[in-house]
Image (tube, rainbow, N blue to C red; front, side, top):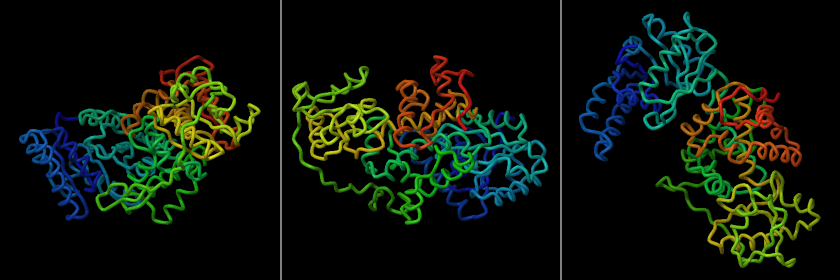
Length: 498
C-alpha cells in the first residue's frame, strides 16, 4: 500500500462521513460518494463544522483542519472505485450491499481492496456474488470513528491473506486498534455486548428493579460510565433488539442470548429511546432525561447484625454501616450477604424467617444494593447505610442481586467467546474497553471477582432459576482447574458449552 493510500467511501451517513473524516484527518486523500447529492452535501458541511469547532476549542491547528478538508472530495462511484481501498457504509441490506460491490468490482482495478462496514450481515454472504471474493473483508468501525479508536477486521470464508494484511496496515495508519475476528453473528464486539444489556433487560422483565435502579447499580457498583438502560436509549432499542435476535439465532438460539420479552413489547410500542423522545426514560426538548418521580418509604436507621457473610467480603459489608449500628443484638435486623441466590432462599438456608431478614450484595459494595421481603425493614437497613454516608439502592428480592447477575453474565458470554476461539482473551478485553467503554474487560472482571466465585454464582443461579443460560462454561471451568487466570493468553480451557 502506498504511503498515502487513496480511500474511497460509499455512503455519506453518520458512519460513512465519520470514516471519511478520520481518514482525511490522518493524511489520506478521500473520495466520498453517496446516491443522494443532498446527503453528500450535508456530510461535507458537517465535517467542515466539526473541524472548525475543534480549531475553536484548541484541539486542532487551523492549518491541519484546512488540510484535512482539502483531502476530502465528493466523487462519483467510478472515481471511488479507482481508490486503493473502498469502504462501503450504506444501509444494512444484503441485496443493496451485493449490488454495490458488483458495481464496484466492475469498475475497480485489480489491486483495489474492498471492505464492508457492516455490523450485522455476513461478510461471506456479501462477497459470494463477486468474481474475486477474496478481495473483500469486513472493516467494522464504531461510531464516531474519530473518537472510537478500534476496528474489527472480519475475515470472510474466501477473504485472502493479502486483503487482511492491507486492511490491517490501513487501520493502524488511521490510529485504530485492530481486532481480527471471524465472520460470526455480531462479530466480536456486538457479541460480547449482549451480556450487559441482555441481563439488565431480564431483571426489568422480572420486575426486580427499575431502569434507574439498575443503571445506578451498574455505575456505582460495577463502575460503568453509562447504565445499560441509558445505553439502550442512546443506541435505540430497535437496533439493539435486532442485533440480539441475530446473535441468538446465529448461535442456534443459545440461551445466554435469548431476547427478553420486554424488549419486543417496547419496540412494538415505539419506546425506542432518545430518537423517539421516550424509551426507558423520558427526554425533554433539550435531550436530557426527565427525572422520574419516586415515592420513598420514610424510614429511620436501624441496628443490624451481620449473619454468615463470606469471610473475604465481611469487612467491606461491615464498612457500609456506621459502627454504632453494628452488633450482635438478637433484636437487631438480620442482614445476610446472598451470593448467587436471593434473600428469602438465604434466610431459609439459615433457618430464619425471610420476613425478618434483609440482604446486602456482598460482592459489589461500591454502592449498597439492598433487598428484602419486608419493605419497612428493607427501608430501615437502607437508611442505616445512608447514615454512614454511603449510597444505597433498594431492589425487589427474587432472582439474585442485579450486579452479580450482570457481572456473571458478562463473564460467561466472554468465556464462551474465548472457548469458541472467536478471539484471544487479550482481544476480548480490549474490544469491550475500547468499543463498549467497559471499565475493564469481562475476563479481567472475572479475575477480579475470582473465576471460582463467578462459576459458583452461575451454578447457584442455575439451581435457583433452572434457566440454562446460567449453565457452566467449560472454558471457565478449564481455567479454574488449571489454576489459570481468565485474562492471560493460553490455550488452556475447554470448548464452549453446547
